[in-house]
Amino acid sequence: MSVIGKDIRATLGTREVLRGIDVEARAGEVTAIIGPNGSGKTTLLRCLTGELACHGTVTLDGEDIHAMPAHALAARRAVLEQATPLAFPFTVAEVVRLGHRAGAEATDPGVPRAALAAVGLQAKAGRFFQELSGGERQRVQLARVLAQVWSPVLDRRSRWLFLDEPVASLDIAHQLEVMHVSRGFADAGGGVVTVMHDLNLTAMGADRVILVSEGRILKSGAPDAVLTDTTLSAAYACGIRVNTAPVMPFILPQAARPVG
Image: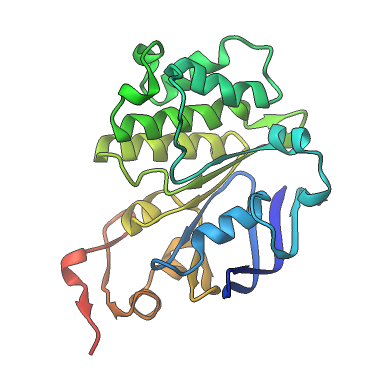
């Protein structure tokens, strides 16, 4: 089971953001999309979810996502965007139920509570969303998308989480919590596609890495194949050194140096 994009091209305004990308993400894995600012990471994610119109084809387990009814697509995949502002005074529980109602398990009243517990916010279910810190709001939104596709596999079909920079505003403990949630979802048979900036968390948590540069895929594969000195230095336009600990590669920021 997989999400496959073929010859994905996208233009925003007059700028060609994606220039013919072929990509595959597999169920049971965490696929991380990395690359410098402006390289097309978020645009690629939005094309894979159907949130953004693009040229080319995107299939979910062999089905064209653009031919799927909205309710059927919502039952199969959930999307966490970088920011999801709310203008109305919803409580935390109400925000999570927005995702729950869009999913296939909307009749199970225990799902929103379990989703909040998964991100450590069950005690704040009755608080207003606007009263929370930025990091707490991000975790509530993660609980919302989890509630939408709570069972990683349903009716023998994998379900998917698409996450755009899910750890960007979080402290280290909650970053690890999000990575743990993603890992658990994939290990249970679901698929996770996430845009990441933190290369060390990517090395730690991803099964497959897609490195995007200037609207094209510079390299994709296992973390140790993509996270190399030469490849990262070329993508980020600065000298980067990848070191290897006993369990995984790691990238030291102090080793980065401007090129030239």
